Image (tube, rainbow, N blue to C red):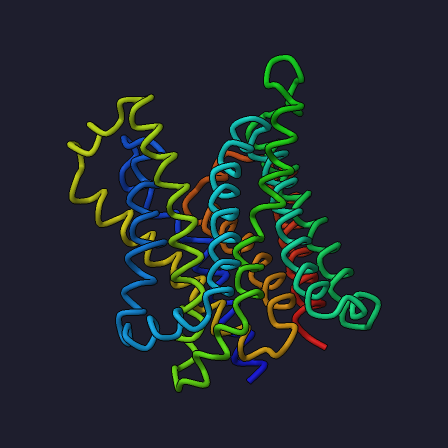
Amino acid sequence: MLFIGLLLVIFGGICSGIFAIPFKCTKKWNWENHWFIWSIIALIIAPWFVSSYDLKSIITLYSQNTESLIYISIFGLLWGFGAILFGKGIAYLGNSLGLSIMQGLINIIGTMAPIIYLDSSKLLSPLGMKLLIGISIMFIGILMFANAGKSRDGNTIADGKSKNFKRGLIICILAGILGPMINISFVYGQSLIQSAVNMGMPQYMASNTVWSIALTSGAIINIIECVRLFKKNKSWSLYKTNTRNGLLADSLSGIIWFSSILLYGIGVLKMGKYGTSVGWATMQGVCILAANTAGILTKEWKGSDKKTMNKLYLGIVFLLIGILVIAFN
């Protein structure tokens, strides 16, 4: 069961790392054009399509677990804010510095928070120490990726005057804190999941009882931001160009991303009590690996010198070591 759960989490991480590739099919669209369609598919249509398999039972389940629904909705909303801030953090501090701060915090908080919630004494146990060592090694890998990205793009650390460094730093920290809320919503939804299992639901349906609420809550924030940008940038009209290809590509992105979160949910249920910690750290590491591998294959690193590529490869090595430390005894 543990091995199967780990495999599902790894596949989930791969999907999470590559989901944005189809966005490249419609380069003339703005970010909000892609993200609006992605949000509707990934955060609303896909989870509720899965729920429609046994909607009557799910409605009964929700009516009997209103307290859990409130917590899941709140954490889903917070994650929605974090998703928006993530993009803004990169805009302020650049891809290398911004991404390293945010992804590092998301990994650390998302890994350690479930243990603290379930049993804080486990922080000093062999499991807790293994997780701390693993995410520390992975964080070094993230820093190596950041450094490689900085070398590739010719970026320097953001200047306080020209890029409002303080504001950007605050945004990145907030994004890093709010990003793991999707995992914490899953932790708080364990009683709901157990009730679903007791009703005879399969594991993919049981985990989706949490995702349907958390993701829909997060969708509200993302869609509102897209609408704001449509008005600001007058970009709604861009849908008139490459409509069919764009809709298909962004819908595919949404399905791939939702598959990642669905696989993660099923996987951690098979990994035992602390699956949300071990699974989260593993998924985030695999996600970064998959994203950078996809970047290499799609020639995002084309033209980079040998020194830059060595930093990238070294980052991959550290991430792999960190994942192995966390995932295997």
